[in-house]
Image (cartoon, rainbow, N blue to C red; front, side, top):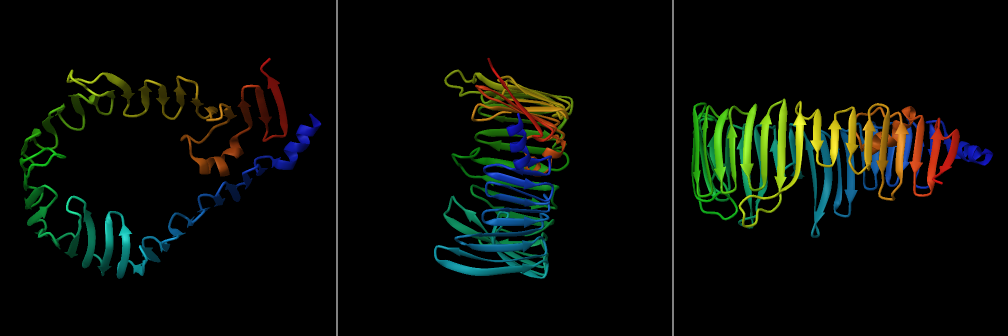
Length: 367
């Protein structure tokens, strides 16, 4: 018993100091686990080739270059792709360039939103499309011939379709070419807020006072909304769904339909109060108070108790468990120890107990 107490004092002092084989912590100021280091988390975090300060200042580097940013005001960096390198920078909203930001590539702007230019990929054609805008979002033109003076008139060419709007969102209409990956050839249109219609080879839909009332049909699904988002029901070969928002929802996922035309049930979930109560086939959740998996691999009674069975077969439990969201490693590294008064590790050969941050330890054997 004395040796265990001395060992605990050497490697753990209350919730403040802890040292393990691959981790160490001086809480709440500093912690390290693997390749991740926190300093007064969430103020500062570093991990191998990047670091972040206060979620706004960020630096990242790799074999292709580096990037430093103080979002959304300033950024600079250098990127090398296939031997070609280029320096980029930006001072928002005055001027800037960026190789890839959100879904935009080779982004350039000046006095945003006065002028903006960027590229997006067109995988179906194996090329890139350039979009230019003046006084975004009012005037734009693209390298594929699309252009618009929003909201008066806009036309956009897409992969298999040609979309137009006038006095957006009042009038919208589109034509579609035959395409094996979408709903096929046909047309669609909407006179908002009264009526909308889709007529394509593999999809038909009508809507009244869109998006409140609608019926949509595809080869394997029928969906009704009466009115959206409060009442929805959907039946198909892949899933069935009934929703009375925010009171009740049931979703049944199905396996491959085969020749029967309707798939067999593979899994399901029933929800009450939107997502406050969720009943899965293998798990029950009552957010944030209760979570229980049927195989015993996870149990949570918030804010008192939490048990997790790891890949090594050891079940680790703790009291208290105040943070209402599970599996947040940064919270476990830096803050959870302050309210974790008791821990237990239950394996095949016995159970190790730790009380008051390892000051008191004992072991119980299965036999």
